Structures are given as C-alpha cells and as structure tokens.
Image (cartoon, rainbow, N blue to C red; front, side, top):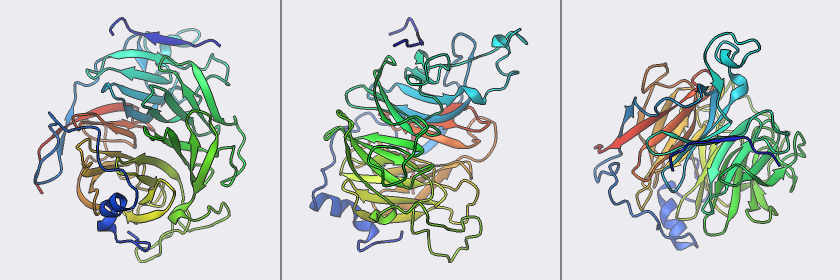
Length: 391
C-alpha cells in the first residue's frame, strides 16, 4: 500500500418525553453521568450565559508547499487539540492551482492533501491523501472526519458510499461500505452517502450519519466493522420512498416524517446522540439505542440546503452548550443543551474575517474555542476564541 503524505519537522417535537427533561431522563435511564474533561482553565464557560466568540484572524498561518484548500467538508479537534481538516481538492480551479498545471499557468498554488492535521497554533503537522493513489486507499470526496480514542482517523466519502478508517499517519485499516455501491437505508453492509461520524470512547461503536442517499443513522463495531443497528427519524424505520415538499413548506406545516439529509451527528457524555437533519431544518435527539427523545427546529422556513449542517458540544463537564453550523444562513447557532432553546448566534454571509460562506465543518477544542470550515467557495477554516458572555 502506498501512502502519499507530508509531515512537518515540528513534533421540538416531543415524542412521549419533554425536551427539558433530556438530561434527567438520560441520567436515570441508563445514560452515563458527565465525565472526562474537567473544564479547568476553560475561557468559554460563564455561570450567567453562553460564551461569546471572536474570530482569530491570524489562525492558521500560511501552509507549506504553496498549498491551498478547496471546499472544506469536515473539521475535527482531537485529544491533543490538533485540528484535522478534510477538503475537496477537485473543487479548485486551474487558476487557483496554476503552479501544478502542465505547463504551469503561474507560480502559485498546489492542492493540499485531502486530510490535513494542524497543531493548536495552526502549523501544519502532516497531510495525506491525493488523487494519484489507488481509489481503494484514497479518501476520495472526503466528508466527515473523526479521530477516535485510539487515534484512528475515520473519514467519510459521501459520493462514494464508504467510511474509511486510517491510522494517524494515513494507512488504511478498514473500510465500511463499498465504493460506488448503495443498497438503501435497510442494508446492513452498504452505505449511502455517509457524512458525519462519531465514535463512542467507551463502547467503540461507530455512529454514522448515512444521509446523502440513505435516511438513517447506522452503527457499526469500531474494531470488527460488524453492523449493529440503524434507525430513521423519530427512531422509526427509514423509508427511502418518502416524499416531502421541502421547497414549498409553510411555517405551520408538520415536519417531515423521515430524515431528509442526515448530515451531522455527535454524542454527549451522558449517552445521547444529537443528529443534524440538514434539509429538515432540525436537530433530533436519541439514546444510543436509537430511541427517540426530542426534536428542535431551527429557522424552519430555510430552503435550499437547509439550516442544520453539523454539531459541536462545549467541553465543560455538563456540556451545557450545543452549537449548530448553518450553511444556508451562514451562521452558527448556540443552543442550551438541556432544553434545546436557541440562546445565541454569530456570523453572517461574507468573505471577511468572522463571516461565513457555507459553514460545513465544525469542532471545539478543550478550551471551548470553535473551528469552522467553509465549503462551496468559502474554502477556509476560521478559529473563534471563546470568552465569557451573559444571557
């Protein structure tokens, strides 16, 4: 197996349950108590209200080798506070990559590898994955990225129906699904447009938002790759034939009975799974078994790609805040996790520092700072430093 990489020289619609009771229910019915990060030294937490975010326009510094990123599809901060980014080099134009054209059109630039690791200061640590590799080893069209508790890097390939497990240095370990093959939402082996990924550090179960072609959350064993279970919206069976008029929906219309685009998901320390249903303009909450808990709709009349792209949780012990990147309204929403009420937002459409064009990947570090990657023509990652706020 040949791996091409660069390494630097530096080392609510309630369903039998009330939304405000989410945390209590999880705690008294088998959910794990909060634990792990102790929150010490965090700048983000305030006893009075959610954090306030300010852009750090100096992060990251210039990348090496004249690299440039295409549309950013995933951002993840690992246990070292290193920031991992997946992007689409194929979205870059010849003018943007003039140095590698034949003959060269100019002196800059070159596509960065598909997966890039930055340290906390924003310096590139390594990069791997390029289109000269065999397609069986290459994370083509990467979408969704997660670094698990064993330091394996999971990358989704949404157009090609697979999730690939790599070592930290980019060696392929396992593939879930099959390249360019989809068996529908009830298939136990094949995937259909996987996007977000989350791995439970206690059970080593891999939760996948399988939602560009399929309409489900699906769970596999992280060691063996064995299928474990799956579910659709409201914890019901997915139906791939379901139709809903997303473009024509009205404010009083019932939400769709099926997932639209299961795009992002994240697990909390108390055993809940939060799912971003992109064109459904909503977050749905489940227990890890797939049992439905609650729903929150965000900007309900958002059309086009919808409002619910990807999720992140604050790092304090209670994980008080839930963040939602909205790639159509070009902002980040802050929700209070215990009742899913929107308590803040930041960002607007634009190309200046602190503005967004299609925020599509997002993650949080141990101090509560947010890193947001932009797809489409945004093609960058911005760091937002967390400070105290008040309600």
